[in-house]
Amino acid sequence: MQRRAFLHNLAAVGAISCLPLSIQRSLAAEAGTVSVDQLPQLEGDITLYLGRGEGGLYENVLEAIRKRNPKLNLQIRRGSTAALANSIVAEAKAGVRRADVFWAVDSGAIGLVSDAGLARPLPADLVGQLKPGFQYPQWAPVTGRIRTLPYNTDRLTPEQIPDSVMALADSDLAIGWAPAYASFQSFVTAMRLLEGDKATEEWLRGVSRHATSYAGELGVVMAVERGEVDLGFANHYYTLRLKSGKPDAKVDLAFTNNDAGCLVNASGIVALSEGDLPINFIRYLLTREVQSYLASEAYEIPLVDGVKPPAGLPALSAVSPPKVDLTELADLRPTLNLMRRVGVL
Image 1 (cartoon, rainbow, N blue to C red):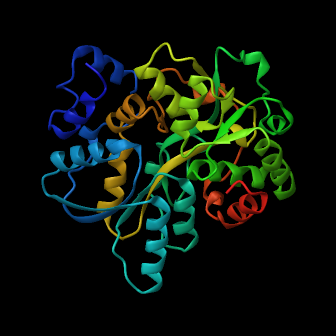
Image 2 (image 1 turned 180 degrees about the vertical axis):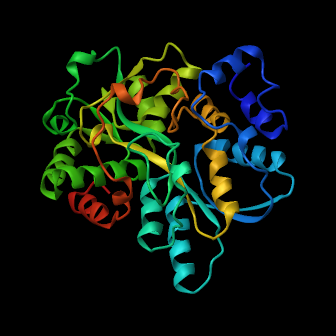
């Protein structure tokens, strides 16, 4: 039985007791996490602004929450994460609040809303469920995604890949990237924060001389696997998803060390209205059932203690991401201006 079954059990009253013994034992090992069985029923009206992403898997989670909580009237407005964040800020300026919670696929959008003073503080016990480094007082990271260097295993060995992302500007490797993709732009923003604008501009100019552009990061990973390029820049899950359907794929993951090339970004959720309902809704997304589902089906990184990372990805403790306040990724304007000046957008 695959982890997809968690979502069916999430919707059932006896969520954990319904699971096969092998999975119950697996969950017992995750004793530090909270189960849906420990949460109160959700009742009342709530409007969620949902950033599009992850191929409908977030929608599956929401449908399971609906089924488990028949007295919950959950209304969903869907759109791009950036557009919804801007809508929330614009509505607040007009004296209107339409969203009670905002689930974003990128932490920068959460930062935009928080910087506008619209985020409600979260209870200490909820924040305390999250891993160190992902504990924020006004928003809850839901799942993580690490920047990686997917590389073609026929064309490169791990020893041939620099452990510094900055070194790739001067390499002779054929590189794939997706400059118009939001995750790539967040990565460049992190580089600006860590290295400065001048070094980031020089890096973009250097890489652009031997880079091929693709529409999205799945396209980058597929190009790497086909051997069109030696390596690329992409969030980890694109490679893991490709390999799950094609175990002999000629692609693997490399990681840089303590720089923007291994930034751990996060999807996240923020409460925008008063009352217990928005906070308790957020609690459901941090349960072991939901976290395990997103790890096994979306290959995202669980950010509560005690839930195993997706298969094929090392634990966060085994990699060296830089220390970046994820909400500082909110202002993309300087990044976009820089990328346009260099000519990569």
